[in-house]
Image (cartoon, rainbow, N blue to C red; front, side, top):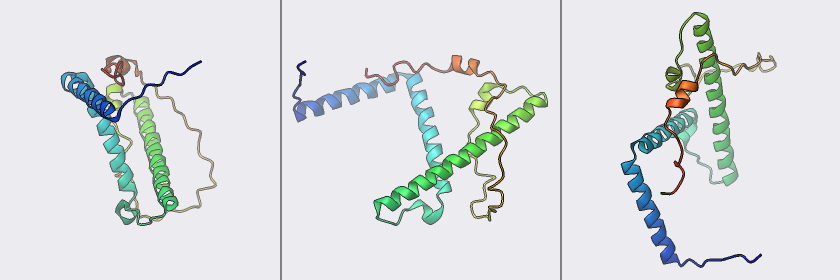
Length: 166
Protein backbone atom coordinates (compact mmCIF):
# COMPACT_ATOMS: atom_id res chain seq x y z
CA UNK A 1 0.00 0.00 0.00
CA UNK A 2 1.55 3.33 -0.98
CA UNK A 3 2.22 5.77 1.82
CA UNK A 4 1.22 9.36 1.29
CA UNK A 5 4.02 11.66 2.35
CA UNK A 6 3.41 15.34 2.72
CA UNK A 7 6.31 17.66 2.54
CA UNK A 8 5.96 20.44 5.04
CA UNK A 9 8.30 23.31 4.67
CA UNK A 10 9.85 24.60 7.87
CA UNK A 11 8.24 28.05 7.51
CA UNK A 12 4.80 26.52 6.99
CA UNK A 13 5.28 24.18 9.97
CA UNK A 14 6.27 27.13 12.15
CA UNK A 15 3.22 29.09 11.02
CA UNK A 16 0.96 26.12 11.71
CA UNK A 17 2.41 25.79 15.23
CA UNK A 18 1.77 29.50 15.86
CA UNK A 19 -1.84 29.16 14.69
CA UNK A 20 -2.43 26.09 16.88
CA UNK A 21 -0.84 27.81 19.88
CA UNK A 22 -2.98 30.94 19.32
CA UNK A 23 -6.17 28.89 19.06
CA UNK A 24 -5.29 27.00 22.24
CA UNK A 25 -4.54 30.23 24.10
CA UNK A 26 -7.83 31.77 22.99
CA UNK A 27 -9.65 28.61 24.04
CA UNK A 28 -7.92 28.75 27.43
CA UNK A 29 -8.85 32.40 27.91
CA UNK A 30 -12.53 31.89 27.02
CA UNK A 31 -13.15 28.54 28.74
CA UNK A 32 -13.39 28.95 32.54
CA UNK A 33 -13.76 25.20 33.30
CA UNK A 34 -10.64 24.50 31.23
CA UNK A 35 -8.72 27.16 33.21
CA UNK A 36 -9.87 25.59 36.48
CA UNK A 37 -8.72 22.13 35.37
CA UNK A 38 -5.36 23.43 34.13
CA UNK A 39 -4.83 25.35 37.38
CA UNK A 40 -5.77 22.34 39.51
CA UNK A 41 -3.38 20.05 37.64
CA UNK A 42 -0.61 22.66 37.73
CA UNK A 43 -1.05 23.06 41.49
CA UNK A 44 -0.82 19.29 41.99
CA UNK A 45 2.35 19.06 39.92
CA UNK A 46 3.92 22.02 41.73
CA UNK A 47 3.04 20.49 45.12
CA UNK A 48 4.67 17.21 44.07
CA UNK A 49 7.78 19.02 42.82
CA UNK A 50 8.04 20.98 46.08
CA UNK A 51 7.72 17.77 48.09
CA UNK A 52 10.29 16.05 45.84
CA UNK A 53 12.74 18.91 46.41
CA UNK A 54 12.05 19.01 50.14
CA UNK A 55 12.95 15.32 50.46
CA UNK A 56 16.04 15.71 48.28
CA UNK A 57 17.81 17.72 50.96
CA UNK A 58 21.37 16.63 50.11
CA UNK A 59 23.28 19.58 48.64
CA UNK A 60 19.94 21.47 48.39
CA UNK A 61 18.85 19.26 45.51
CA UNK A 62 21.82 20.22 43.34
CA UNK A 63 23.40 17.26 41.57
CA UNK A 64 27.09 18.13 41.54
CA UNK A 65 28.21 15.15 39.45
CA UNK A 66 28.47 15.60 35.68
CA UNK A 67 28.19 11.87 35.06
CA UNK A 68 24.77 11.17 33.49
CA UNK A 69 24.60 7.75 35.15
CA UNK A 70 25.17 9.27 38.60
CA UNK A 71 22.67 12.04 37.86
CA UNK A 72 20.04 9.50 36.86
CA UNK A 73 20.78 7.45 39.99
CA UNK A 74 20.33 10.50 42.22
CA UNK A 75 17.03 11.48 40.59
CA UNK A 76 15.65 7.92 40.64
CA UNK A 77 16.68 7.44 44.27
CA UNK A 78 14.90 10.64 45.26
CA UNK A 79 11.84 9.65 43.19
CA UNK A 80 11.74 6.27 44.95
CA UNK A 81 12.02 7.95 48.35
CA UNK A 82 9.35 10.49 47.43
CA UNK A 83 6.91 7.82 46.25
CA UNK A 84 7.55 5.71 49.35
CA UNK A 85 6.82 8.66 51.67
CA UNK A 86 3.68 9.58 49.67
CA UNK A 87 2.47 5.97 49.94
CA UNK A 88 3.18 5.94 53.68
CA UNK A 89 1.29 9.22 54.12
CA UNK A 90 -1.64 7.83 52.10
CA UNK A 91 -1.71 4.75 54.37
CA UNK A 92 -1.75 7.00 57.44
CA UNK A 93 -4.55 9.13 55.98
CA UNK A 94 -6.60 6.04 55.11
CA UNK A 95 -6.14 4.65 58.63
CA UNK A 96 -7.27 7.93 60.18
CA UNK A 97 -10.33 8.00 57.89
CA UNK A 98 -11.18 4.43 58.91
CA UNK A 99 -10.88 5.33 62.59
CA UNK A 100 -13.10 8.38 62.13
CA UNK A 101 -15.72 6.29 60.31
CA UNK A 102 -15.68 3.75 63.16
CA UNK A 103 -16.20 6.59 65.64
CA UNK A 104 -19.30 7.66 63.71
CA UNK A 105 -17.95 10.62 61.77
CA UNK A 106 -19.44 11.33 58.37
CA UNK A 107 -16.69 11.67 55.77
CA UNK A 108 -17.62 13.56 52.63
CA UNK A 109 -15.66 12.83 49.44
CA UNK A 110 -15.23 16.58 48.91
CA UNK A 111 -13.30 16.74 52.19
CA UNK A 112 -10.98 13.92 51.15
CA UNK A 113 -10.42 15.55 47.77
CA UNK A 114 -8.65 18.42 49.56
CA UNK A 115 -6.26 16.24 51.55
CA UNK A 116 -2.73 16.08 50.20
CA UNK A 117 -0.31 13.17 50.69
CA UNK A 118 2.60 15.66 50.59
CA UNK A 119 2.75 15.98 54.38
CA UNK A 120 6.08 16.94 55.93
CA UNK A 121 5.25 17.65 59.58
CA UNK A 122 5.87 14.11 60.84
CA UNK A 123 8.97 13.41 58.75
CA UNK A 124 12.35 13.71 60.44
CA UNK A 125 14.77 13.99 57.55
CA UNK A 126 17.85 14.21 59.77
CA UNK A 127 16.90 11.55 62.33
CA UNK A 128 18.38 8.18 63.11
CA UNK A 129 16.56 5.27 61.58
CA UNK A 130 16.89 1.72 62.87
CA UNK A 131 17.06 -1.20 60.49
CA UNK A 132 16.03 -3.84 63.02
CA UNK A 133 12.43 -3.65 61.73
CA UNK A 134 13.31 -4.55 58.15
CA UNK A 135 12.61 -8.24 58.71
CA UNK A 136 9.14 -7.69 60.20
CA UNK A 137 6.29 -8.63 57.85
CA UNK A 138 3.85 -5.68 57.57
CA UNK A 139 0.10 -6.11 57.79
CA UNK A 140 -1.75 -6.53 54.52
CA UNK A 141 -2.67 -3.26 52.86
CA UNK A 142 -6.43 -2.62 52.72
CA UNK A 143 -7.16 -0.19 49.85
CA UNK A 144 -10.92 0.03 50.54
CA UNK A 145 -12.42 3.07 52.22
CA UNK A 146 -16.12 3.13 52.97
CA UNK A 147 -16.60 6.53 51.35
CA UNK A 148 -18.85 7.01 48.34
CA UNK A 149 -16.82 8.92 45.75
CA UNK A 150 -19.57 8.82 43.08
CA UNK A 151 -20.96 12.30 43.93
CA UNK A 152 -17.45 13.74 43.58
CA UNK A 153 -17.05 12.18 40.13
CA UNK A 154 -20.45 13.46 39.01
CA UNK A 155 -19.69 17.07 39.95
CA UNK A 156 -16.20 17.14 38.45
CA UNK A 157 -15.96 19.01 35.15
CA UNK A 158 -15.86 16.68 32.21
CA UNK A 159 -12.45 16.17 30.70
CA UNK A 160 -13.97 15.66 27.27
CA UNK A 161 -12.05 17.58 24.70
CA UNK A 162 -9.33 18.57 27.20
CA UNK A 163 -6.53 17.09 25.13
CA UNK A 164 -8.02 17.88 21.73
CA UNK A 165 -7.03 20.65 19.42
CA UNK A 166 -9.63 23.33 18.84
